[in-house]
Amino acid sequence: MTDIVGYAYGLTVLAGGLVGFIKAGSLFGVLACLGAYQVSNNPRNATLSLIVSIVLLCVMGGRFYRGRKFMPAGLVTILSLIMVLRYAIRLISK
Image: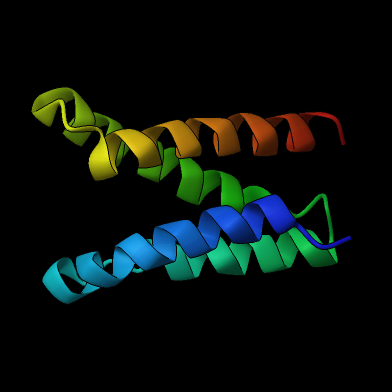
């Protein structure tokens, strides 16, 4: 079953990450899409997706806390939190 939510998250991060890649070499969007691909092929293979989501939650959460700007840090923080919960539940319920 295709991980549509994972791909949507990955593409959202990828779109925002294009600017990040140009500025800082960020590859989180590519890694999030790779993780969604892995989950699509094996729903229990959510480790990469979980790690990427946790890292983005921490990094963007910190930026949101310091800057108080919703775009893009707040949005990515919320999306990352949702994905962390989603993938953690998936891994726990193996």
